[in-house]
Amino acid sequence: MGISARTYQRWNRGEGLSEDLRLHNTAPVHNQLSEAIKQEIITVINKPEYSALTPHQIVPRLLDLGCYLASESTFYRVMKAHNQLKHRAKGAAGQHNKPQSLKATQANQIYSWDITYLLSPVKGAVFLPLHGDGHL
Image (cartoon, rainbow, N blue to C red; front, top):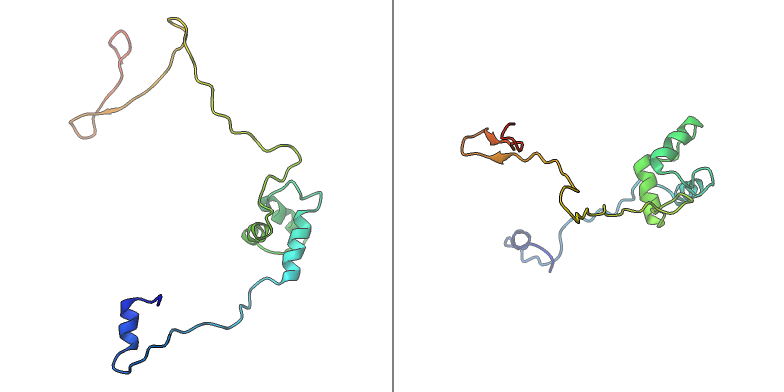
C-alpha cells in the first residue's frame, strides 16, 4: 500500500477505515517562477555577452544594470531544467589529464621528497624521517 505499519494501525483505530487519510496539499505555489520569467532567464543566458559566463557572474552583472530576474541558484535550476548546464565558453572544455609518471632508467635520475609521520605507541608522538646521515 505504500504506507508504514504504524500509519495503518492509526487509521484502523477501532473505526475500520482503510482509505488514505493523509492530507494532500493541492494549494498552488505562490512563489513559483512563471514560464515568462523562466524564458527570460534562458534568453539572457544565451545572449552573446553572457553565453560564456556562469550564473555566478551573470547575476551580479545584471544587478549592476539594475535588472534582477532571479537568484543565482534559481538561474542554475532553470539552466538545469533546460539542459544548459554544460561548457559555455567558445573554446573547448578543459582537459583533466593524469600527470605523467616518472620512470628512471638508471640510478640517481629521480628524487622525491616525502614527509611521512608514523604513529608511535606514545600518544601525540610520531616517528620523523631521518636524512641519509641519520639526522633530522
